[in-house]
Image (tube, rainbow, N blue to C red):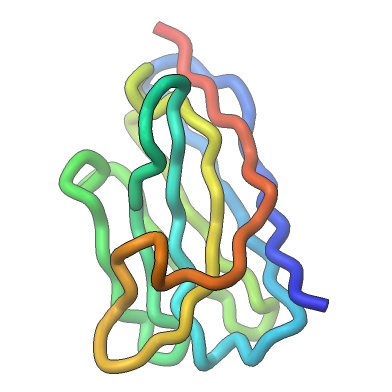
Length: 125
């Protein structure tokens, strides 16, 4: 059974930090990229960051570049998203997802076949 389980969300003040975790199981982890997406109330889901498990290649959306860091602990089949300098615009439900990693990192939602249940991140001003 494929599972992606997010944790680490919560309430934080503006300027604070959180670290999200995504624990994966049930599929060949090294063959995949793990992406983080977020959806704020009334807005479409957007890609935040992704990492190729086998080579550590990363991608960041412009809105989080320099503030968020994605990393992978392959021994634990877990991907982390370190989020620093959070602001209220980062408030959203954050989802991790897994998509096959081919010639390039998957950037679009449709390229991801497995999804977690999401974790709420709320940044107060």
